[in-house]
Image (cartoon, rainbow, N blue to C red; front, side):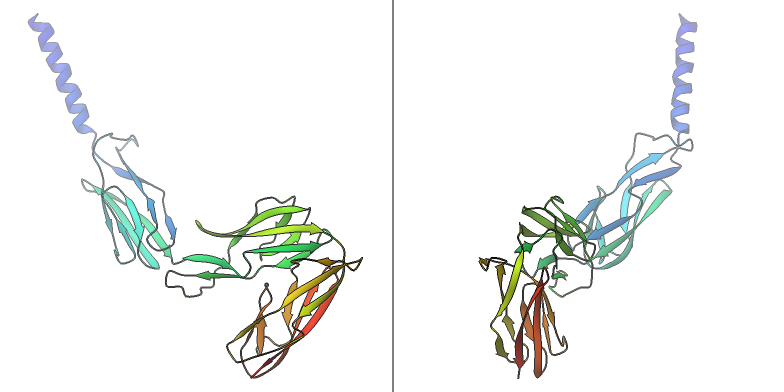
Length: 275
């Protein structure tokens, strides 16, 4: 009995010594890098304490810290919160070992469209570019290009530059994404032949800095009016007046510009005077 007890005691001692010998060697942090789009948005890091054999210890928790809390803060659970645009390093440490994760904060607040909904009329393959604006958390315009997608490519496709092309009749959403920030507009496709276009008003007068909305009037090959048609707008002189995809023209300096709209081979023009 004494021998059995002695053997059992030795076994416990050996196991305890083995457990004590498993010391932390590395910290495995996931993900290995963070890119956070949007101020006050958050992502979480996880950390596993590993021994020299690459096996998780199963005990202990890493301590988190940020190299620049003005850019990114981290709480005791590894949740990283974006504070302003910039770069920082998040560190995890435990009993003398550590790991670092680079963090980049990109200040994107919203993606807005000149026309939140529009109709794409014409034969299949008719294209119209979308005008969009990306703003940061302070509502300043920023120069970022979204990643585009269509909710139903059997109705409409969209290019990397935000040009929408009709495929089949119906309504779908066109989505723009920058990281996990997104905006969407709705497009209704109607497959009809375009006979002619008109642009109203034919002549408009605005002051520098003011805007004028030009309306497209489309007519089918049979002469029947097609309601709510959109077109591709251009200005003869963007330095004098620019025009977006919704037909909103803005005067920039004194002068005159021709506003032209095209759709499925038809075109119309109007004049914008700026004083």
